[in-house]
Length: 287
Picture 1 (tube, one colour):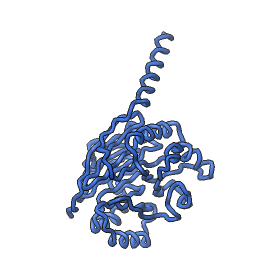
Picture 2: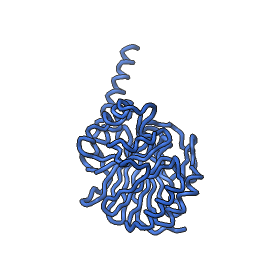
Picture 3: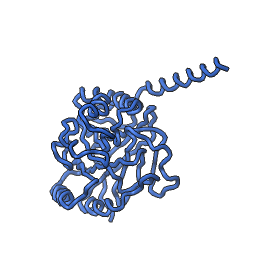
Picture 4: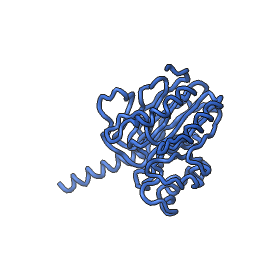
């Protein structure tokens, strides 16, 4: 009996080691001159599982040279001393940082405002900010406090933005099938009319510790990627009318490529499984 138990444990370990060591299986076109990036949220734990997911991220960069990472909030759980930044972020993503990959952070409900001064989060002292890559404008918002000042800033920036692709990323999801939190309807009432007015194409959010692709809402594509450091297993409501695809069995991240009028995406789990993939075609919103 003891020998059989040991054999079973060894078989499981061998299976897991093979899964973690599998070669990347890219579904993205990986074209020259594309805007290529990674999306991940709710990372700030410093656990072994977060490190395992980071190792998969690194392996995929060998075949898909993404230039930067969008962080969707809850970048630090618990303390936020220098040692915490090192354990929960710098040590975990050191190989990517060594390759000069930039991480652009948004603030979550577990994050202190002072994160905006941390050099590796590239917030340049601002709780909300905009940056541009190729034909894509990215807007990092602070969904903790969507006050008039931020709303006015967002309206002004979007009104003057001529980029074909406009992407926002922040922590709380306007649409969600999560049992723990669900859709943030108050936030949605504020931001959705602005997104529709100025042609925001895609929204990335975290907060829910799983992955969910929402069915297009009024022409806007919403994604939740909040299992970069924590997992809320089985939290997606079965049969939700919002869900196009969901994955709540393991941690995951997103790879995204924008080229011309197409945005390709691939969602990859901690065990190197592709759990979702597809393409978003640029189109005018239907209100």
